[in-house]
Image 1 (cartoon, rainbow, N blue to C red):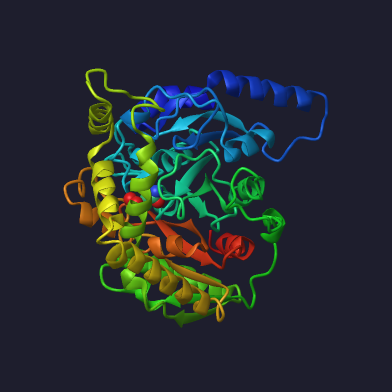
Image 2: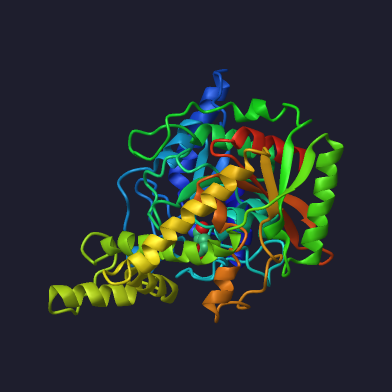
Length: 447
Ligand code: GLN
């Protein structure tokens, strides 16, 4: 049924880049046979899921929405993909995104933009635009996305679905095509908070193949949803409610806060004083790490290779010139500059120091409150083409999301209804490091 819907309706949304029919149908029959035999079924038995195309799936084309990876078929599964399938999920295919997950609108894909299923003239957000749109359009029950600086939370908000950014280290990154390794995280998109808890329970946990994955025991997120919220302290960071925040988003958050108060939460203002430095800090660190990670695409090991070049270095440069899109090139240039000998101390090192200050802001706030609530984005989904000619305007889209990314804490976006024009509004909830259970419980209360 999902494949039928994708075939009939995805032409206008453009969320899937490839379908893995054979693997999906084999898994579906296997689960069906288990059900026929009356066996105990795993938690995601038969659940159709889609995978952002920066995660590898054995034998399936992996593109990262870039021409430079074209033709690469990885011989292995990402750990997150493998865990979903072992839990019974049916893997439908790979989902469109911004090239190497760099972007906030899904307009940086070599395979064309994704359209927002809730308003076709609008972007679905990015970089996991295909993952959010697929859930919103009913092309999957759940999907995987990645969030380096907002790429799960922002598209979730724009498409009216739930998106979870787990704590750094909670979900293995093995098999993720790296953008910025100290920031990249994998998490689920779902239609509701309960499904998100179920997905996260399957995805989380130590993996010997990712040294940065944590061996902290995984909590029962689903059971935790039913716990009480009375007495929980909810912080409202004043820096996230300044000028430039859309009035309808502000009003929706105020209503959600009233709901939390009525449920017995204590709502109080807090301050995260270094917030204004988050966007510049993020764009130094993320581009620096990207310039290093993307050096592996040299025409030798993956995908595209220029055929005309006469020398090795000509082959490198011609392949990279033809294979990378404009935004990826911009970031490689910025990142290489920030890491170069004469500028390292002024940019990269300074950004790392500010990153520590941003983290301390959150740690201080969390000595006083259990979760923070904030907007995900300053405005609802914008129109296609609206910000493509101004990179800085596009970067400012990340103003409320990147501080949490730099600090490693968990976060999520939960739908809060819609604007008068019918555009979805998201509420951002941020939790302590490994505080997913409490965060999800608060989300359940507002959804
Ligand atoms: N919009 C941010 C960027 O362009 C975040 C991307 C992401 O989280 N992958 O870098």
